[in-house]
Image (cartoon, rainbow, N blue to C red; front, top):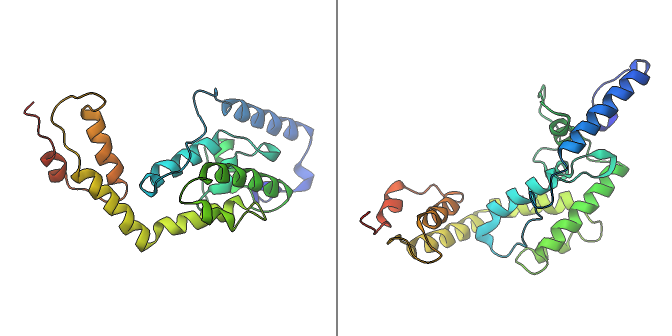
Length: 211
């Protein structure tokens, strides 16, 4: 209970309770052990315009990885330091991802593992310099929060929007072609939509196929 900062009475902890908690954790851990071909390691980060998709892929991947003390590594990159008051979680996995304390020996180990993953995915891209400032302490959470702040900045938002506008301006659907069908055209707009609410008019204007 200490590791999720939940109140407890040491006198209430007995062998049956410990066994119940152990079995619950075991079931949750087995459920997160997805096949390697189901949840793959994210691709290396190469372009600022891919930030939103890449960020989500990292979070999903960390949910599938269990660190020290059987904790899902996604808690390292969660948004809030403290769990929301009176929050109710449907699974132990979800509870731990949102409530486990962000200090202590388990956190230090898991934080380092998260940093190593982020560093390996950003070595040859635009985020390399951002990661170097957290290398000495292998501070995965610190690096992640810095990236979140950076991509929320006005300058980066403007840059990302411009990249999306350029992609849209250079795309149109004129019928099925090799390696480019209607789903590919939709994907371009979906990607742009994550950075800026795009009007339906622009989407329809780019469709040049009479069908």
